[in-house]
Every structure is written in C-alpha cells, then in structure tokens.
Image (cartoon, rainbow, N blue to C red; front, top):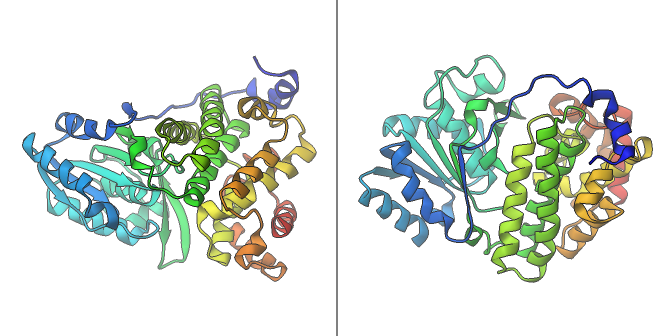
Length: 390
C-alpha cells in the first residue's frame, strides 16, 4: 500500500498513466553454478555461437570450458577479440563485422557493463544495415531483430543483461549516447554470484551504487508505472541487504547473488526515465575523466537531498524498501565503507569547471524531465556545487 504522502506526490501523474511496454529477457537463470546453464540453453537459440568477453576472462579456464562444452553439444564456436574499454561505436562496428564474417547466429557475452553493452549493440548491427553511429544519432531505425543474445554479468551494477539499451561513446564526435530498442533486450540472462566474488570492495561498492541509482531514480521517475516502480523497490531491498555483507564477507555467495538480483531488477525497472544523477553524470565524466560509477556515487545522494527540499515525500517508499529514515545518508555510509569518495573535488574537479560541466550537460544530458524536480541549468549548478563539497 502506498504511504499517503507518496500518494499525494504521485497523484499528478499516476492517475493519468498511458499505455506502456515491458521488456525483459525470456529467462533469467539465478544462483551459484548458473553459468553452466549457458551451454544447456544455447542450442535452442543458435548453432554458431560467438563468445564476447574481456581480456582476463578470454584467457580463463571458465571460458575455455564453456567453449568445449558448446562444441560437444554440436555448436560452432568463435571467441572475439576482447572488449577492453568503455563501449564505443567503433568497437561495436568491429564486433558486428566479426559476427557477420563468422555467420554467427548467437552471441554470448560474459563480463561487465562494457562487454554486455558492446555485445548487445553488435548483435543488432549484425542484422541491420549501416554503422552504429547512424543509429546513435537516430539517422537510422532498427528494423530487424538482433541475433539472440545470452548475457552473463560479472559485476552487479549496470543491469545491462535486462535492459534494451546500450550506452556508447562516439570518439569521433566526442559524445556519449545510447541506442535503444525493445529488440535489444537479451534473450537470456545468467546471474551467477561465482562470477562476481573476485571483485574487490571498492569496485563492488561502485557497481552497487550504479545499481542503486537505477533503482532509486526509477522508483521516483515522473514517468514510472506500477511495474517499473515495484521492480525498483525490489531492487533496492536486494541491494540494501547484499552490499553491506559483501563489503565485509567478500566471498559470501548469497550476498553476491542479492546484489546481482538487485542490479538485474533495477535494469528491468529502468524503462521510463531516470533522474538528476544521470542528467549530470555524462558531463562530469567528460570534464573530470571519471568512471560513470564514480560520478554516480557522488551525484546520487546529493541529488536526493536537493529533490527532497521541494518534495519531502518523494522517497517515502524508497525509505521503506531500504529500511532507513535517511536514504542519502545510508548511501554515503555504503560509499565510505567501500573506500568510495562522495566529493567531486577528490577527483580533481573544481569550481572553475562548473561552466564546462553545465555546457556538457546541455549537449549530452538526459532524464532532466523525469527527475522529481526539473533539472534546469541553475538546479544543476546547485547540485554540482554541493557535490564539490561532498
């Protein structure tokens, strides 16, 4: 049941909901050892598999064993060059050409968000004409379904295994924008906590903050619907339960799975716009050379504080899901426990960078109208200044 204060906050849009679509993988395999389900599931999706992963996993016994298992089941298998950086339109074009060259009819991605987003976009470009940049700039529309895609995340942060979006950098134009289509949602996701236990405390915390941002901002998005809101609140519960345990007991598979579930549920929730941390994060990353998750860890709690000034009830259900009275304070506690800064100044940004950050936000920022408070330039300046102080 909605709290009365939240019902009042939502009344302006909840009663006027329009029709909406829900996209999700057709199946999500969860639990320790779920990685083995890839080989079991693959034959129903294709016969010529391409494995996409990072440099470390590409040389691992886990991937070698998967390669052999797939071959024993009668599949032809190739392994692409590793994805070693943030996903770019150029790398997607290269991978799509690789998939076409080998006549692949199934993509299996194993890695963090960069690997999954690269593979997701390449699976689309392999079956659609043109180059990735044309779709990023909306000069072309996706018309053909992509190659079937199985996604196994090795981090609990982006939720890319459950989304219809790939966020890509265009180095030629110096921009970072997404391509999105319901077809892009992976056919199957594999949530195996054994894939995440090697992450150190800081990276575990950073990726969890990314998932928290997806879930919290989806829960209070002005375009949220009943599905995305409930998925978001479920994600928050899982993350709030799993992260503090992972920070102390790094090998705890139950806690690792809770974080993976939270990240995936947040991905399912992330279908109707996010909030201010995602409006400003691309600009902060461009100007300050931060990781996306580093920027989010700083921006999220401070943006919540500013939102609450105008809408004190906005986070009532988020408070309930997390089990605390002050969500922003709890997020800051998580960050400090994981060795993650909540101040932009610690990353070298200064007051003199403010104009450049705002200009970059105006070029690349999104989610400005779905935040509980419209992200105007002046509001964004207040947020930036608060984030400098920490």
